[in-house]
Length: 292
Image (cartoon, rainbow, N blue to C red; front, side):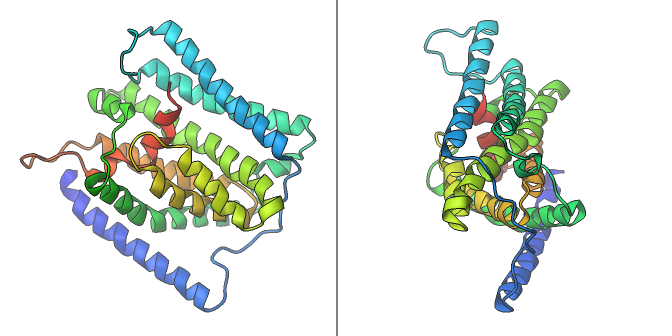
């Protein structure tokens, strides 16, 4: 499988290039990059956004406390990702999303304003796949460059998956990174936060929410920089479509690539290491950053 990485990367780059050229063509013709659906403004305010942020942190802290009680560690020891930690992190993100929706509904928000409805699901799915094809090669290239030439990326979740590639371990990583994280993070950053900012900043809300998304993943190298680009892409989709469902699909596909790359065996060349992109893709920054 490793031998196929080269041809797959070439095909991916060509597909991305074709997609980018089409977007440029649309811009030159004065056409929007993504067809817009009717605006779907949100009714909540900044206090609601702050409350949901506190709720998110409370869920994560609560998970950390529970996991530490179940799997106590030596004082001063480096935190290690465990099966229990990953499972708890996934549950915490899903619980946060559910509670966040309940809170907003109790505050008077219509169900349609939460971003989980798409009046054109087939079109949204096509846009999600097309966006994923376009953004994956350039973002992974930026991440690889930063890792090799600026600051090396490392994270306990990478070590966890390399040390344990059993089916339960892989399943927990997939649950956390491909299911829970895309739902929770797109809900908060692209709907709760960006939706509120759009009522005040308009299009500029996309940039602000993308920067916040990137900065939320500080602490393990410079992987947060390409994540800002990722946030711009999914934020634009959310702005134009009024729904976060396409962004969730893009997020899940992007993280699925990361899981696949982490599962590949290391190259057999002397001094070789795992594919450079596998250490700083969205999987680690989304799932592991929220793991106690």
